[in-house]
Length: 184
Image (tube, rainbow, N blue to C red; front, side, top):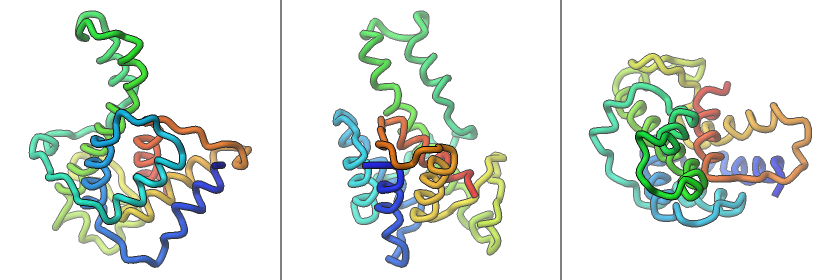
């Protein structure tokens, strides 16, 4: 599946009843945790993204509300490869799995941010022009369709050959959601 094909597949949902973003991300997190051992392909990623519109959401963990910064994949990589802080776990196995840890961290961060903005910034009628959360993080998209569409639009707008194969990993999902949060 190419970048353009993937974009068209996630974009076909427009005008279908939308789930609120926090609930959608909670459902997506539950699916990701259930499927984390699977190899992620573009088709499987598309299936996860679409299934999250109707699947059962995970319960929010109040510890996530302590998260104030967007995850950084470099920090996560260091956490799992630093000799002093990591276990005796095979470094090659951990390196292959870092993308899933990053994606889970992104989902937890975004869920926490949205939860903290309920009844506050999320009530702003002009939020799609951009708002800052109470932790100072910038947001432009607040529903599943717009965050996915803008995340994919960011991929497409920054690549010259959008008809090439869209190769994905678990990190791709975290990147897609973060780009969708901040891309206008």
